[in-house]
Length: 291
Image (tube, rainbow, N blue to C red; front, side):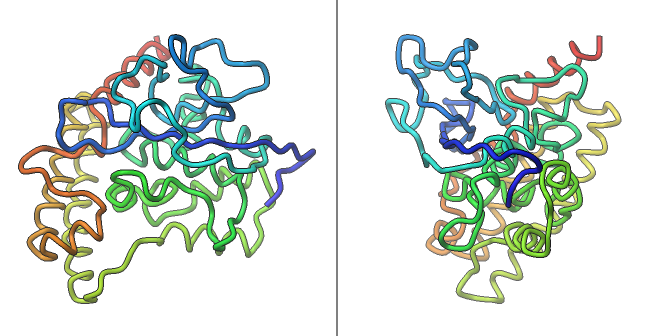
């Protein structure tokens, strides 16, 4: 898995923190990637990126050293450092910029469309982490294991666009040679989901998800047509995620539900699969770029 041209290596650090709504008792994790440690308070991460270092926003905001909602406290790396091909990572996704006036999708690792349509932060981070190569267990490095990763994977797939890997292959093809081994790994990673002990229960949960995703496709289309602003679209998607979890809980029971999703359903609180604050932020940035 080498990038076209001269190879340059470095280490990637994966960060995870509570999503932007700290008062929500059902917080999922935002994830992002850097090549350097947080300098710590009082400055923390700043817009003055260290020379030759990289910060990938991953469809999020810059996180400062004074962020009291960071998990765990204080700022600590969730996973890494992982040796990576930095030139490949930078080709997959431009670093140190939150948006790009000439190509709005570029800082999102080539995931096109509005935030929350074809992916969110987990999918962007997973694309960047591809540059770490094949791991000892034969898989690609991802954010698998952060809070809510399974729910995000169900809604968007490992690399965005659910089971359709054509966009991901196109983005990778601009940066590296794709052979049979790489294509097989993409397919295997995109279908990487924990199985349930009961095959019948697994199929029933997948059937629930299929119906929910049909409704999400409708919401995405209506959002594109201007029926919803970004915040309302995000809330509507989160309501669908809550429906999916609630109906899955009825099928699985509490124990198997927690084992499968890695989270516990918190009453009527909505999971933040698509963060309304991030959605509104990028809607503003896109409007500014288009002006």
